[in-house]
Length: 135
Ligand SMILES: [Cu+2]
Image 1: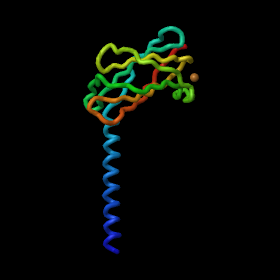
Image 2: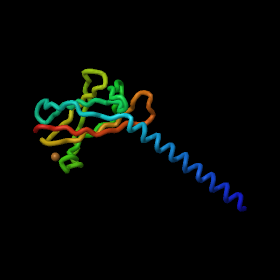
Image 3: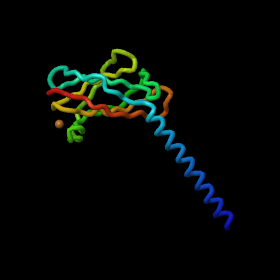
Image 4: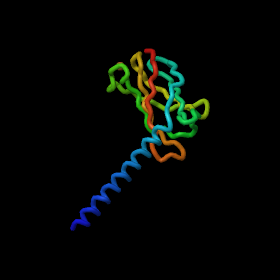
């Protein structure tokens, strides 16, 4: 009886440690990359071309061929997080750069939230880049 209880406790502790390891691996992968603002240019009324760079944090090298599968542009930086607008992906000029067009309907600072799959990484890389928009 006592030994069974002890065994369960040991197993529980082992499970906790394993979970901790898994969690720290997830965070390490996410921290390894970051999106950096490059430029924002108005393209017609209420539209902004935004270019970001995805870099490997350790050596600051650009990361090409990432698959950006989720984007969101909203005015969170201006206290309007629910003001979200459509974003479409464009073609990048060089490896490691990623371009988007956001239908920025209001002048001010916008947040572009990105989720990406990077080659060789199982975890999703996410990042937020602020960019300015003119009306
Ligand atoms: Cu707004």
